Image: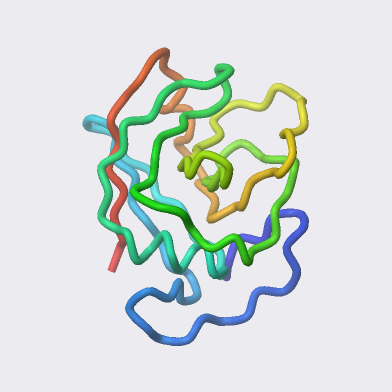
Amino acid sequence: MFYASPGFGTMAQAQSTNSAAPESQQILIRMGDETVTATLIDSEATRDFVAMLPLSIRVNDHMRREKTGDLPGPLSENTERVRTYKIGDVAYWPPTEHFVIYYEHDGLSLPSPGIVVLGKIASGVEMFDVPGSVDVTVELID
C-alpha cells in the first residue's frame, strides 16, 4: 500500500516500467553505517525520482527539522503539492530541486509553493537529527 499524505487522493497503481513506482516500492537511505527504508507513493514526481536512482546526495541541515540536498535535475511538477509535512516525510522542494527528509516538526507550515511528498520513512528517522551536513545514498530496493 502506498503512503498517502494529506492532499493526495487515491493513488493509482503504477504501470510496470523501469521508472514506475509500483505498489510497496521502497528505497534504502544510508547515512554512514545507519540505514532507513522509505515506502514511496505513486506519482509522476516519484517515478522521475526513481529513474535517477541510485544517488549520493550531500544534505544540509535546515531549521533543525529537515535535511535537504540537491537532486541532479527537476522532478515532474504535475503532482499535487502540500504545505504541511509529517516527521518521516521524504519530499521534493520544487523551487530548488531539493530532496528533503523531515526528521522533526516545528509546528510551522511550509511556504508556497509547498512540497511534493515522495514517500514515508516509518521508523529510524531520528538518525538524521545531527547538526551540519552529511552524505546520504539513496537506492531502490528490489
